[in-house]
Image 1 (tube, protein in one colour):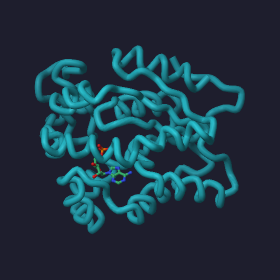
Image 2: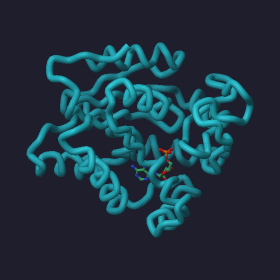
Image 3: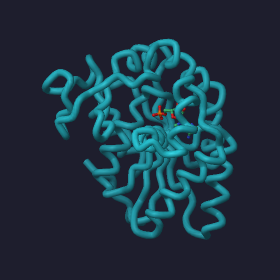
Image 4: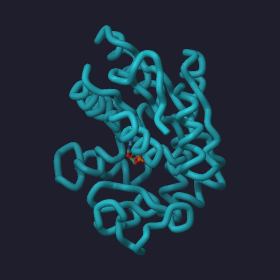
Length: 225
Ligand code: AMP
């Protein structure tokens, strides 16, 4: 079920906000397909840069391995670059960006400078810390296009193989327990305050992320109506 609004969806900008393991990537991909929007996932972009061995990929690698945030200047530049490619033609769904106050301010400023619409809606996918730790430990990712799976919640039809593109599934190195805990700490310290930032702007909706992928998706669509 796709959302419908009077404004249409050709230039809509949506942020999915939530901790690592909250299901942002899964929901963003589904929603992007539904809205024919561009799905911009900062973590996926950094992993692609690494796989291609670019300078940005090399720079990001150490931060990612430690579960720390990549510096704001390069991250903001990368995301704004991707958003401007989608300019005017496509809606976009931001997944994993912004992740701190400085990134959120840079995004607000860039959209204001561009003179077009700002962020339309921020959907916060709420999941308890205990559940997040469990999810990150069971997560598997597809090598070719980063489609996400989970040993219990969303297993592939054939173990170890992506249902969509047939590529190998692997466990992300930063999903190991120690790094996952560090990522969650970084999330609670730096990203969680953005819930209030967007609530104050009157554009925040919260959905309960501790249900099935289908049910969370339905709530997410309802929050966009
Ligand atoms: P994710 O795939 O969203 O869990 O991100 C994986 C890693 O990429 C994070 O732990 C960070 O090291 C880096 N990263 C992703 N998005 C951002 C961002 N908006 N700002 C800084 N670092 C990021």
